[in-house]
Amino acid sequence: MSKPRKILVIALRYLGDVLLTTPLIHSLRQAYPDAQLDILVYANTVVMLEGNADINQLITVPSKAKLADHWTLFKQLARSYDLAITTQCGDRPFLYSLFAASRRIGVVPPKPHTGWWKRFFLQYWLEFDDDNTHTVLQHLKILTLINVPPCFLLVPPQTDDTQALNQLVGNSVYAVLHTHPQWTYKQWTIAGWTEIGLYLHELGLKLVLTGGAAQAEIDYVADIAKQLPEDTLNLAGRVSLAQLTHLLTNAALYIGVDTGITHLAAATNVPVIALYGPTNPVKWAPWPYRFEQNTNPFSKIGSQTVNNIYLLQGEKSCVPCHLEGCDKHQGSRSVCLDTLSPDRVKATIRLILNK
Image (cartoon, rainbow, N blue to C red; front, side):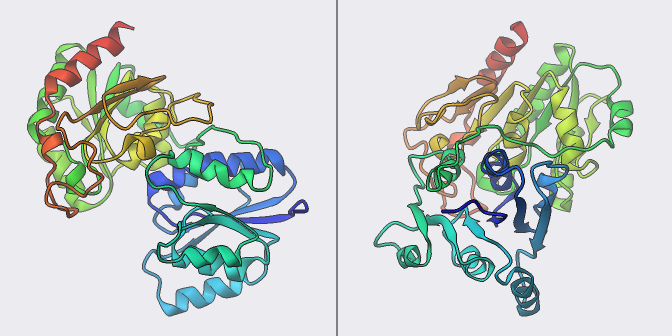
């Protein structure tokens, strides 16, 4: 394949998934410093790429696009690129890649899964592995198809708009707690968060609670904040992701569940306590800071520590089940997380602070 001048990377996933695409983007920039490198993402995830110096242009489309949205995008993409790269094997990114470039590489479903035929429309392809390959490594393996050396660095969003945030935090030593994932089946208990918050306060750390702008999330975090000391700083819905990156970089530690913000925290080198239940750590554990090996950082079973990541896994025999909670839907609870003891989290906090 000749050296591309214009490259489009298609990453139509959630916030955390977009962040896990940045090593691929950074690798492309290192290999092709003079190329135009554009990224197509959902409009509600573009904030994860704010200030990313590797990118020339961010192209967005609504996650629930209407016919007019598709038509506008198709006209914008039509044969505008030398190379299109799809980081997932769904129909929508595949269709966009067909319009964008005559040369296409990406992941495809393994045979005999639906969509396995997409490989016939790609110049080079890789079968998607949803079980035994970390998402960062899956993305980087795409680049081996065109002999681009891998860079394992995650690139978080950046901003200079941090003055107001610095004034809120002051000179205190603080811990960041991100308590609300997108789906119920990834939640820990409110009682657990309250106990850990009070414990951190006893140790002399200021508490900073973070959360998204959705009203349900704001209300959930507010309920926890009411049970914590008065000087607890509740920033749910009040800071951008780029500002949050700055906040995390200067924290003493971070505690969160399986969510995009936990991946973001991992990329800042803050010590991260990640609470995992049904999710497979091999595929979706936070990528450790300065982990630069072409091997999975974590195994499937057990609590583990790699670089700045302290992964605490539920102890039920079914973990990780890879399911959406015990009732197999996104609004379900997960017993493995409901029974995860605050004492385990406290022990890990002591380990981090003693270091």
